[in-house]
Image (cartoon, rainbow, N blue to C red; front, top):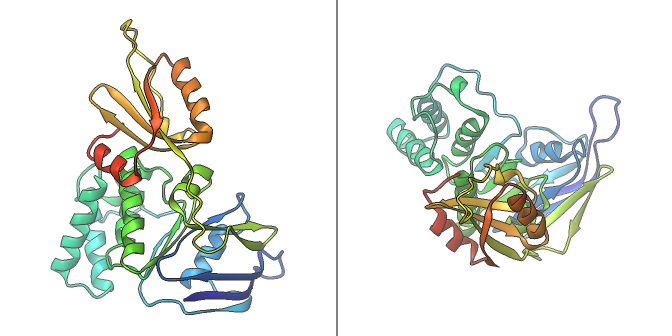
Length: 293
C-alpha cells in the first residue's frame, strides 16, 4: 500500500503548498483528487509517483511499475507517435517488437488521428493526450496516476479512458486522477481526497464510491426539418460520454445536470427523443464504441 505520512511541500522559503498530508492508496483503488486550481493537486501527484520529493514527511510503499500522465505533455518533437512509444517501451524493458505492438494496440484503441507515424509536434492537444495515455500503459501499471486525463480528449476516447481505468483496477493496480468536473470524479472514482489550504481530506471513506445517478439523453433533428445548431456536448457540466447513433446524438449526463443540458439542447433547436435512466456504463460504452461526435 502506498502511504503518504505527514507530507508537506514548499519550494524554497515560499508558502506551504501541502501540509501534513496523510493518504493511502491500496490495490484496486480508484481515487480522485479534487481541489481548485493552484490547490496543490499536481504537486501531490508528482510526489505520489516520485518525481518530486516532499519537504517534510515520508512516502512509503511506492510500487515498482508506475504509469503517469502529467497535466502538460510536451510534444515539440519530430519523432513519430509510434516511434516515441517504441522507444519508451524499450526503456521500460520491452523488446522493440513488443513495444511497437503494444503502442500500436493502444493508439488503435484510442483512435489516434493523423496516423501512427504522425510527428508528435503536429498533433492536436487531444491527440497528444492519447499518446501520453498510451506511454503510461505500455507496461501494465501497479499505480496509474492521471493529471486531468480527460482534458482535450474527443468523445470516443473518453469511454476508452474509462475502460483503461477499470482494467488497471481489475488487474490489481490502483488509479489516482484529478479532474475539475464533479460529474467525472463521482462517476469514475470510488473515493475522493479533497485539497483545501494545503490539507488533504478523504471524503466518504475508502471505497465509498458514491456513484452519481446518470441519465441517457437522446437528441434528434426536429420533425420540422429545421437543422439544429451543433454543440460541443462533452464540455457541458455533467456530460460524461457522447456518441452518435445514426442521426441521433446520445448523451450520458449526471442527473443533477440533466435539466441544464436539456435547456441547452432546446436552445440550439434539438428535439428530445428520450430521457431515461442510464444503463450500466460499460453497456453505454459498448453501444457507443466506434461512434464519435
